[in-house]
Image 1 (cartoon, helix red, strand yellow):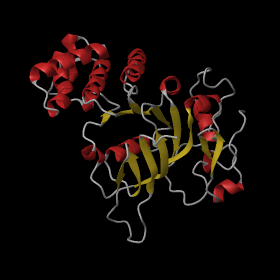
Image 2 (cartoon, rainbow, N blue to C red; image 1 turned 60 degrees about the horizontal axis):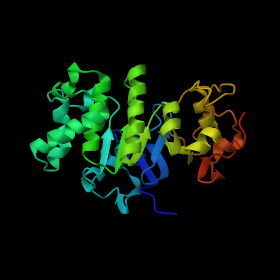
Image 3 (cartoon, rainbow, N blue to C red; image 1 turned 135 degrees about the vertical axis):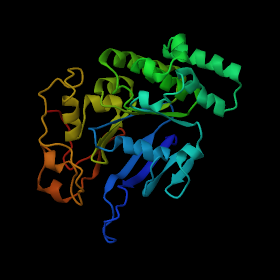
Length: 322
């Protein structure tokens, strides 16, 4: 097996220290024991409810927030918590498309000027920058006249297309997409989803995608991981995951999509909601699990293989669907 392009090893992120916290009690974890392997040119999709830690993981990998445990390896180069931030180690090789396109663009710059920024950083001359930006705009389905307008005077879909184009202008090896469809209306969401599928096929780059849109994830992803309360509870090739999810939470997540193509059985309704309470022992999903036993309350679940590269953290993984 070839080495993964991005190898995350036992990564841990704690909440920021508080002044009134006693010296004996460490800050609780936001992320704990995060381990994942993302291969070159694949689309890795991270699923989970809001508050599960998905965006925190992206920010830690980019170096926008510190991590306190573990390390990751990007294209053979290891980054630990003592190293300088990844975005400085790998300028232009890692790019991020934010959830809200309007707030990630400068309100005082036109869309075209924003898309030129990474090209200018590469020392590309003005005339060539304009040529590249217009070519990217055409690929993004962005009208030429929109390049002369500021974010406040164009639609959210056009802003997001400009953000994707700006990220591609840097020629990154890996593109992080944090809920790229969430801030868009239904029609625009479908069009931008189509755009991302085309971008993936055309540019052959690595995607690290965070999304709530399970139908979109099923369509675009190569591999899937499910996060719950700062832990990855399941990882699998996308085809295996959507055919036979093994963790109880994964099953509930798919049933919540109300998409018969993803889940054609009785809907699973979980009690309660995701909590930020620190769990010192046992399974983090225990309070809401419909398959729990006394063992789950006291013992952390082991990692179990359900198939080729299909890993589930559960004492009693689902080997058949309900």
